[in-house]
Amino acid sequence: APNFRLLFNHVASNFIPSSWNISETPQGIGWNHMNVAWKSLRFLQWLSPDTPSSDDAAMAIITAAEQSPSPLTVLMLGPPSNLARAIELSPSLPGKLGRVALMGGELSHQRMDLNFMSDRAAARVIIDSNVPTILVPIQTCGQVVVTNELVKRFALKCCPRAAACALLPKMRQQVRAMPKLVNTVVEKRFAPPATEETRWRPSPNLHQGFIPWDVIALLATVRPEEFDEWEWHEVAMPSCAEGEPCSGNMFVGEGQTDEPSTFESWVRIPHRVKDEASLLEMAFLDLACSIDATTTEHPPPFWGFINHAAIIFGSLLVMATCLVVLALRCIKRLRNIPKNKKKIN
Image (cartoon, rainbow, N blue to C red; front, top):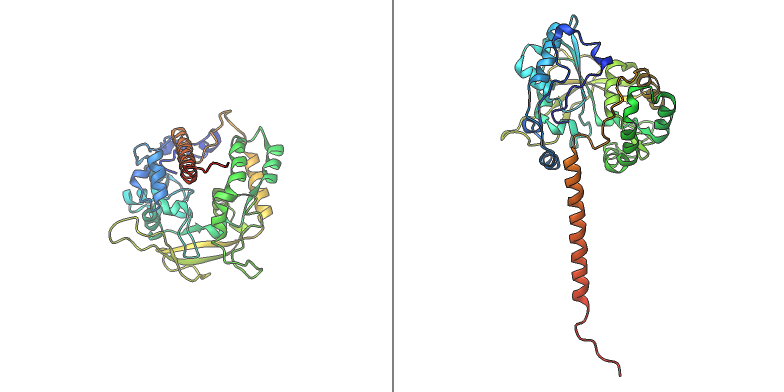
């Protein structure tokens, strides 16, 4: 998301040593400094203006890596702009990182996902750096879907105690909307028809819920045993002769199980989820339930980064469009009515 603040609740902040001197709300790179490849995203950027970009998030990563007693693992759940910026500010940073995990990428040579398409150049900076990188692409994430039944089970078992209960309205919204808005596109990234021999098989519930993208990337990072068919792949996102953005493609080479001699342009990918049901149980009914809420504030269930003004403007735009279409149809019908009707004697 654009300039997404790194919000730490009380529980999470306990894991951040005070000696790191990291602000609780460091801001990062905004849309204006990304290389957004989709026209629709640039239009949303215009609808929902971003706050100015900041290097605070990049400096927080650098500080954490310098002061961590062991090599740091960095998990990027959105556009990887802040980590790329940190590498630009501190070229020695990759040597201080144990590994990087990126939620993004595409394996069927089609256009990439939202995260990488939002800043293709930043993804290339990270993948081309000499640091072990895990890539959790569309084809892996599409194997897991949260259904309304699981949301109900989570609510009964965990709410209102758990912090994730604040996201219940958002979960219900996603269950209804994502099958039509996103999952139909995701389904096309799997080679039909899916069989037992097919490497990537979408979740059978793809049309009944939402894909928990970030949760899957997190679990692939901290619970790799829940995933199967891990392979190293050489990845290329060629630079643009006339500047970014120029292409939405990512080229992926053949996989190998042996670790490469250098990590530059190589990523490790989990191709299959071992058991979708057990993964969801662990993520939502165990891990999410175990973190207690520390505030009664609930985030608004709006679509990602689109603010209230954008929602109102978009609604008015849709209404105006409908009125124009209706008016044009009325005019067309009026023109088809004969001007002079013969009188019947």
